Length: 473
Image (tube, rainbow, N blue to C red; front, side, top):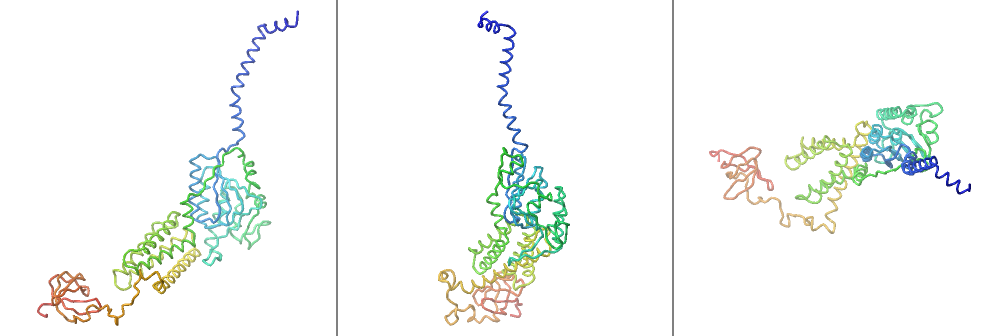
């Protein structure tokens, strides 16, 4: 039989045809499931984290930063993110702001990764210890978390034992929550804590990235973002950055200690100028806006609450009543001044603040008040002489030699004159004497209309009367 005949016999054989059909079916199935296999392999390469939310924590840790971090974590929870990546590079800041950020990191169910890009000093160390995983750049550092009080001159002073003890407890509790050595965390706060081979007594503990890795404070070291993604298995994951909104940036700007003091000075100065200006003018509007920005920004970051705002407004109202309604300067003015100072003072003190925070806030207020008083006196002295002021300020003195005098009744000889009230005097009102009408005031008594009165004092535009009986007139 020829070769072609043999091939034709094999092909036409029933067993071969069955095998060939089965092979075709298997090939079709493999081709149809290839995309599913490719997708499964791709998903397996991405690791567990598909969506990573990145939050920057840079610069000074102040009360305006805490609401941003809290909002960013809430948004990550709403997006069902697989992990948080918090980039830290800070020399520290306010303890209360760091505590709020620390609490937000500890209480979220999303795994948190802290990436120390440069420094995690002071309050930054507390935030770093709150992360489940700590990754540090080569050459980064962490520690030196002892609380200090920064004076208006820029010098740093140690705080009292109360604040140090509070910070030590926060660092210890945070380290314990993440299974890190609490003694190392405490040594970053308290120089009295000594650890053999790690820290000496009398010196605060600050660790380099290599030291932090050896002591299990850090979990990994990297030199760039690519290495971080490879270590965490995020090579194919989406990293979505959340940046502060303009309103959050504005609040951080307004709550800065220097600008906060400047807002107080501008507000106080503008209100003092408004008192010297008749009617409601530009100084009054500027003063109200400056104080509204001060309390509004502090209210949003939970430094100032309803109590502080009510204390300030109540004190301001008493001062206004003392100046415009109640004669002299008495209890209302003193109480009002105390309430204003108390409201401003409490708006700058954190809930756990000790005597150091109180002294710092009080010193800021004193500097602000002295600056306001100095500028106000200078404006009263030199502003009327400015070339552009004649249209706003009276340029000529009301010299008596030029015919000006405040006493409009000096030539009327009204003393001991008898008249009758044509309106109720409660205690101010109008009387008629010799056919002329005069605005008068009593010594505090109420006198009904139609009563006989006698003028007992004339001083400038002020006429004082008393009621007399008709038979004594």
